[in-house]
Image (cartoon, each protein chain N blue to C red):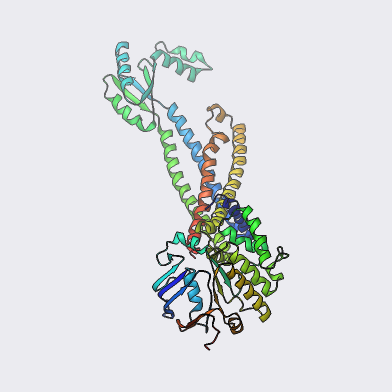
Length: 302
Length: 227
């Protein structure tokens, strides 16, 4: 196929869509629904994932020591923990610091309440807070720390992150199922649209083949038709999603100020669209071209 | 130019349309293919276009064996053949110019070439003033002229015409025949299926008469019926 034929094929592809408006609109509408849902699910998944990563970074393991342990021994335990694989950070909190923090959190407004304690009631609460690279590796690190002499108790607080991971998994399955159904419906509608186009132009196609047109030249306009339907069918939902997401995020942040305080837990529209835009467009073009290819292969064997 | 060596074509329903035909047509020859309906003329044309595959025998055109030709090569083979149909097969929504240009677009000719060649060939067939007319605005004879222009616009070496005068009155038939004869005189090999006794008798070309899928008669400068 020659390069100069591309222009002719694009014109024919557009003319096919124009001749067959009803089916074209139906295809675009279904594809719009499919890609809109895909985009909505993706936006939620991306946000939940970002939240999980954030939590993973914030959630640490706290290690407490046996009673009567010396500062030297604690330091040695710290050195051993640092050497464990996957440990990224380690912070020491002395018993005094723990008590100060507790007083501030609990008796902040009534400091006189704490005066009743003559000695530090948290004398045995010196601890290390340890951060690991990934939540999946936390248990392994905990097991290793458990083997160290002088360690009394290890607290893990990863439940939230683990739950989010589980949620993401289930949500992914449900969305994949819904998207798969819509994907099939979209492809079938595209195939119907292209079939109608081929039927209308059957006489012309047979003639072109007898005159000496190559297969690719005859098929080209229909593939372009599918591609254009796919492009339009992805541009519309992506445009709507962009506007809706932007609006939703600004409303959420305005209403629930704490989300801001959580350090940008919600992704902004550009962060989401950096992933969603190429994926959505590729999906649209994929549906369009796949539907067109299957149809021309079936109907254009002259 | 065209060689058929014991070629047969049996359709899936068992009908034997062409029965062991052997035939040779030289470059630049004009051949009338005559015979009753169902005698195998149109099947022969479709075999030459490689629209159908022979059940037996070998077809060679321009030194190329059609039986073994790859699918990807068929379009390029067909570019050497111009085809004219009884029912013209013009696209109703395209004007005269576009109907002819379609044949050049199909072979991916350059726009400049199309702009130069289409008016030239329309002038040759006597339709210089009718570029913008739609097929339904033309007479039968004019429509067949457009179809002939479309068939020869790519300068094929062979012109296959399947009853090109079948839908025309005697005067238009004669004019179309003169046009095809003129194309032949420029060097194009012509194979013309016809039922028009008057034309065959008047033009005195080679006549191949078919009966029940076989060649019943093959004479140089003959008439429609055996003398």
